[in-house]
Length: 67
Image 1 (cartoon, rainbow, N blue to C red):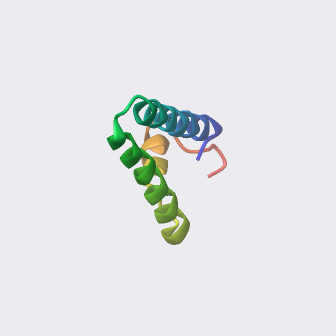
Image 2 (image 1 turned 45 degrees about the vertical axis):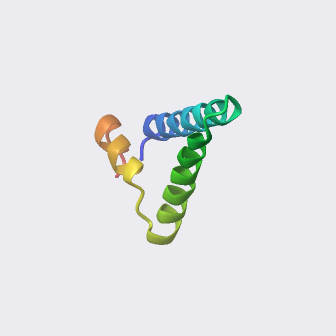
Image 3 (image 1 turned 90 degrees about the horizontal axis):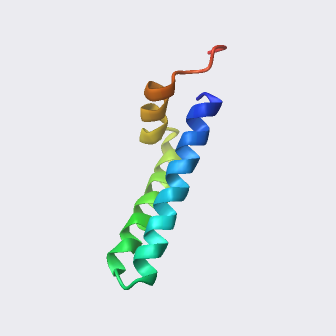
């Protein structure tokens, strides 16, 4: 994954976590499901070596030149 794709992926993950924390703290309990989704995707990536967001961001930003 290119550096730009990694940075975009981390920005997206941080934004989703921020949104979920805002939702939870303003009384919308379903915001916790965003956190559960992120946790699930991190475990999926760790156990299978495949992360769907990696594939999406590679398509958007391209792979590294050396690959």
